[in-house]
Length: 70
Image (cartoon, rainbow, N blue to C red; front, top):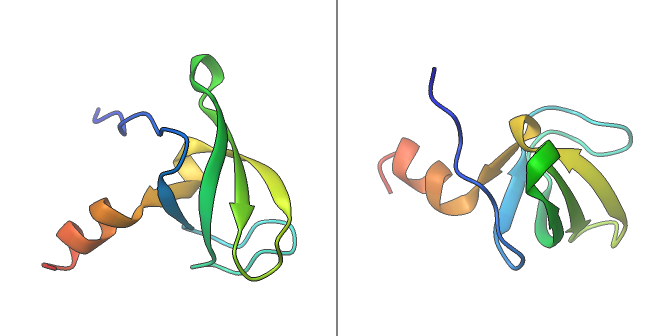
């Protein structure tokens, strides 16, 4: 099974599915990482709210661009 790469502070990410009040595709920036439990504090652009999000629910913008051929 492929394990996604760890995220770093400053990485630009996008939500893969609707979570809480965040629609799918919401963009944000990783503010803090808890890699031993795959959790990340992410500050989202549109709502300027910090959420703790599991890695499986995020995609790094660079990964997304490769996946669509960009």
